[in-house]
Length: 581
Image 1: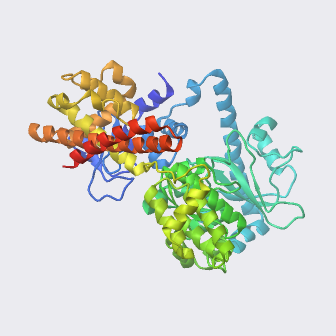
Image 2: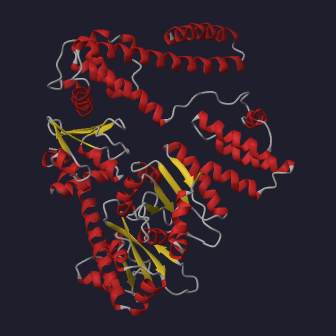
Image 3: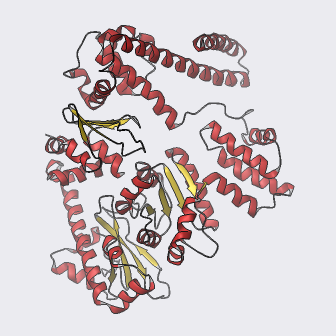
């Protein structure tokens, strides 16, 4: 048995999800309020028989692993490790010999880091100077010290190494953990230490803040890249922030680790950081599993501006809503503001602007937009950013704001966009669907499959013409099966669908909870309605594709191809018009 199946076999999905959602029995299933939306009527279902869950309010679902991934903001590997610990399964037993060796190294590195965190905390308690700095200068409370594993690294060459060596650790193991410098001594010396923890709360490294300025010594020092710590993926404070992010519905993303510590202590526990590195797609994807409302609090300087512009590009790829928090002029960073006035930090968070709007204001202040050259620089900078916005309505919204800011028409802005497009004679017209639109369209197919599963009579309405239009491979597979097996029961999932059994079970749960109480006539009418809607949307998609192809043919001078495309387009437009009646 594979590790995944062993973990699944040892855990009951109701018990696992019950730690996050208050579930009540509803027939053979359990239901509760969605942990992913702010709904007030329970539409979140868990099936102990099928060991799957489905959230109708967000159209998400899956098995116990996918739930933990969604709820905890983890990838599959981290969710497997978390559930394996809960189930008492040793994952190393299921790895190859090479993987087992790496797993053993990672385990020893983690053990060394855990002991180091305890050592640093004990050192803090023994050192009056360090304790005064932490408790009085930084005003960090004991509960915060415990939560973030804050300690002190003695200013001695090999204090930590000697301690860990006595505990049985070898030099290679300490190197794996990132605890030694190039001379074989302690990496961290004379610093306030803050543990870097993964999403499950496991210590994977440290960040150290020097207590006294020393020439050529960095103020902050982080653990280097190790077999446990990857700065391009690590989100500081995530394990402590997850619950608050789910409750508030948004993430506050700051630059420094101590910004996070101060914010949590003041009650703003939805705060995290990408400390020590620039934001990456991995960071935003990890956060997007918990919330798509990301609020940045970067320094209002040239570096902060550049970081915000990069973040906008990444956010467009990941599909999150990015906002910018502006700090009052008297505060240089969130840590300072929180310690001065927590209410001002709260007001700044609540007043966060959409990132593009913030940049419009910033560039308008930085440039002389009353002059011709200032307007040119302003529009060039802003339109290069708005061009990366995928949703056309949102893109034009900001283009309108850019036009209004310098007192020109939207047509003038569009003319400049055409110039910036270089070889393009017109703005890109392809309509890129938002993630919400894609999810909404996918839900129609899920409903169609659900009603067809529970009522074989409805399968007679399924057609081959729809077979190639389903957006997801698992939907396509199930549709093909129902199309060619009009009377088959799915009580036992057939062999050729067992590799997508989780999805099939989700659709069956959807069918049981939504369509089982309906009459035969109502289910038949629902099937007809869903098919009409899907066919109508497919025709609109075909129209948009033909329009794009026609423009390309006209621009390249392919007259015959353009003529054929116009004829096809006219046919589709007429079909769409008939479909509206």
